[in-house]
Amino acid sequence: MKINKMKVRIEDNQGKVLVDQKLLNLPLKDKSIVDLSIVYFNDPEPCMIHRSAVMKRMFSEMYDWFMSRGSMSQIHWVEIPDHMKLWLDTEEVPSHIIIHG
Image 1 (cartoon, rainbow, N blue to C red):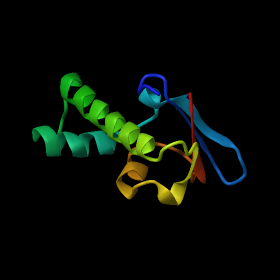
Image 2: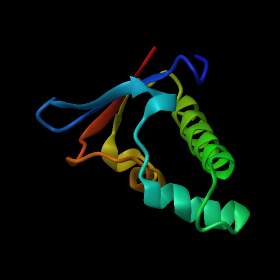
Image 3: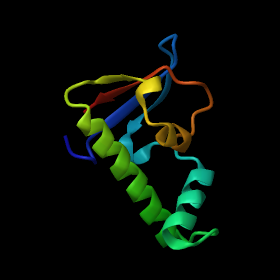
Image 4: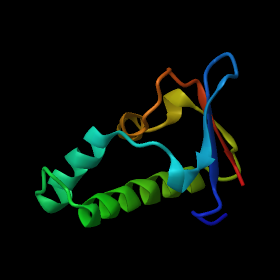
């Protein structure tokens, strides 16, 4: 599955869909983008070029991690690396993520 085709559905423990988007459209916390912009570019007020580069790296890391899980299509929230959990901007606490294409 290619990165631009991967879809991610995030659900709570009741099965309520919190997010159902292509990976590249997942909502990311601005604080996480700024924090990584400081790490990568020493830029606490990232321009669109730095912001875009940081987001691309975040999505690429998530994609690689999801692909490393093999054919597993449902991943419990507790299995997601802590730093990636902090990246995702969800209003409610997720239970699991479903990868689909």
